[in-house]
Image (cartoon, rainbow, N blue to C red):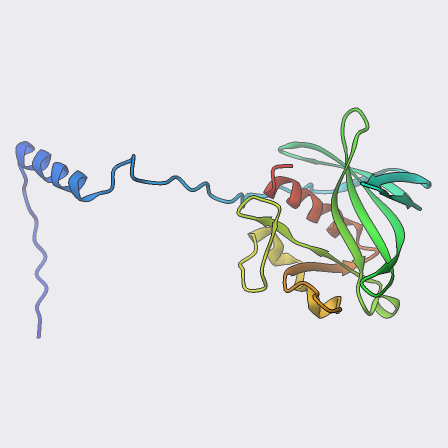
Length: 203
């Protein structure tokens, strides 16, 4: 049996200085501590997206390969962090993961018109029946690393449908990483995922 008795201690200024000195000795010094940057979690998404333009025949080069997008649809959204101008291009790549697959590539468009691919959504195995596409989620530790199936995702992903990539795109060696699934008509989710990627990875 134990009895807990609340006690109020009065410590003089000299005693308080001594106590603080003892705490400092027991605590690791600032030189011993390794600063670990906190991963970005305060993702700010646009309240809405505005359609700016729709065209076709836009080309984007990946090394020695090249996509031709049809259509290529440009949107603009605003957040407290500024303007985001993104485009979604649709293309088909042959013999990708065992079959020909539809892709939707989300591209960031700079002030001078420069393009940078941010996210790839590819057709799931049941795309012909569902119209679903999936994108790998990156941004682990604020980098381009992917999230393992057991990792906790950034809070922004709680409202989206996230799955293990292999569950929707199955082939030998398929990723055991987390992916975001949406319908190919859900352009807002594609765009917002890409904005999240830009902020999480500081692109």
